[in-house]
Image (cartoon, rainbow, N blue to C red; front, side, top):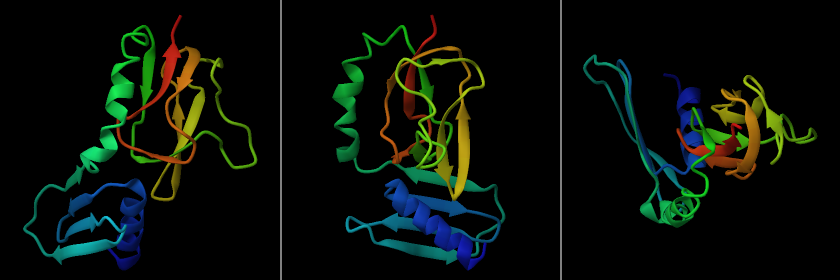
Length: 160
């Protein structure tokens, strides 16, 4: 792993809001911690015995998750008939292909399998997220240009 890849990883971790990320590869072990003042540091980069690559990520402080819990529980009963489209990767969520283009989908948009719903940027790569179901967009659960975690709900879709 070269210096540029490490710098990109540090920037990505700082943007994602994660408090700590550990990465172990064949000959390198890196731990990146972000402090409360958004300062990012590399704790270690030491040779390790050969083992399978391991990536661990600790969730941000529970304070960030606390506001989501009541909001997520209340509509769960109302939204049980809807299908939730979740993020397949961590990164930055974008509703538009570029700033001067219209959004991919709005509330009320009819979608079919294979339609692009949004873009998630991860490590300077823009990944189009396609629908795996057909239906109608009922709710957009994430703001444009917001960081998202793996398996975070993005959209509610009415399959009927």
